[in-house]
Image (cartoon, rainbow, N blue to C red; front, side, top):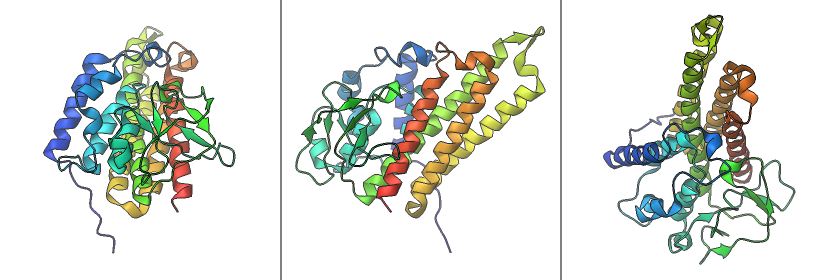
Length: 297
């Protein structure tokens, strides 16, 4: 009989989630993602480093947050979709002494279903000063190999390189869980974006949010977002099913994105609304988790 239970975050984890939300709200707030996805980040990497945020998951630290704690922190981070390598650096530092000894951002290379044999995708491979973790047990990080820029998801600043990072099973599963947590946060933000839009947009003299069909679409989006979050919590608690549950959570977040585009009508496809940035980010997270699942089984 499966006796797995979902735990609550620790007090320290809850405080960290509240703290990162406060910083993000002050830096980003409700700014349209289209204003920063391909421009300068509204938050500086240096500010995160100087405030100690990159060290909250360090594996050799007695005060490090648990995976359950990190789910809440990363979910909040996902809501704002800031194009900075915080999540990937947290994870590499958590599982690698070499990453912890490096002062700057550290990423990994993951083969995905879309990459050619022998190649892998690097989240934030375009970010200045980022280095690569060759393997979780490697003695040091390495400079980023020659790469090809991928423009599909600007908020993830992807590159493609002819080498893949060797991850432990535990690390691969935690990467999957926290990428799914990021997706759940994006889904939560998108529901709010959709509600705000239909509340302020009139048609036939009424807010379109008053129309029953629109209400149903957003109600379904809200349910999907809640279920995405639940899938992530179970993924964190059940290591045997973490890949499947993480993938399910991201799939639900993608459905939320599609529903929110739908209630925007034709505006949902415009560059200035920026909804495509969220969708591309989510699709890329799904591909990364699929690559981890394929190599981790």
